[in-house]
Length: 197
Length: 197
DNA sequence: GTCTATAAGATGATAGAC
DNA sequence: GTCTATCATCTTATAGAC
Image 1: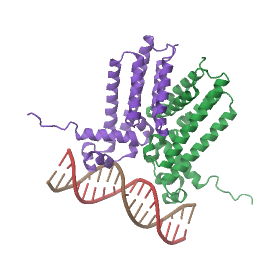
Image 2: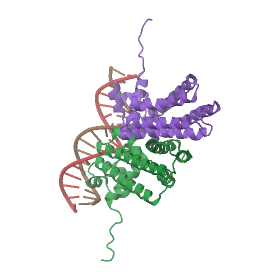
Image 3: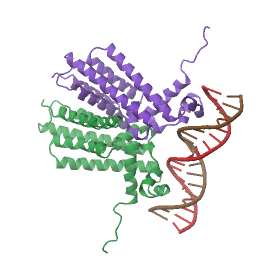
Image 4: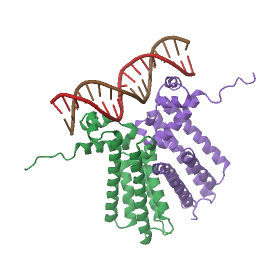
């Protein structure tokens, strides 16, 4: 059985892929099953076979996003051993989403719309932010112990600040239509964290 | 003519008021003319008399929001002469919106949805962020000249950072359902700006 | 100014054929 | 699994009576 050529990507995955893009650019209330259908050569009714309700789709998508982000952070932390490289890599993830892919953070967008989103989705959004907080805190703590990060900063407080500033920088950059804004914030934060104490 | 009792607030203003609340909590795509109608004892069709299209309503609302915010900042700057009091007052504006009124910044929300929003609204959103940037830069610059803000900070860069961090802190706090998050970020930023150089 | 009535289209979702 | 057909409902918006 040489090449029975399975599709590289399943229809369900295709749906998830374009839904993610749609939410990151238009928001949870800014797209419909018909928008998805128009992008992947399927009828909107067929999407209900894979994801019966929009809530199901949202939950699956957000959970997948969290899991994948977690994997990326794990791999980033094992690839880079220094706090500077880790935090620069972290900021670059957000920068890539904003500048290269012209999107917001999925959970940043959903956080704004949190009151209109099914409960299952809310839970995943909160999980995302908690995981970012934990990862950043660990990186900063390790950086302090290695003498790389100034010992005067509180890792938890700066993890919180770093995350908030990057999420906000994406938002403001988008509102201004100017992506330089993001780099200014990211670079300034990195400078603060690595300032000699 | 003792008391011909004009209504304290016009119907158009009432519409603007509840629309602002709806956008700040649910987003531009998360509410309808019927939602407004249900909140102010009017029929949805009547709203079109005051604001023919949703775009008209959005534009009027965002413009009013920008203007009012500008007035508040002007009054804050004339009431408080010190950079510390001014920036604390500024952060308190965002805190009040998030914690007391359970809302996001109107333009923060609209920035997320920017691709689904009429062009007239986009323009106002960009204006809002530019005005924040200008005000914060001036406050920081004056603070440096008064020797109150550490001379080592760049006013423009920190204005950008301050704004992004507060907007992001509102977003993340909301996603986490935990408002302490916001205070951590706001206090940390203030500490950085006023650290002895 | 506000109402009722209604249009024209979008939305999430289901039933049943293939 | 995907289709066509259809649904009930919601959406923005207009026309015309009061």
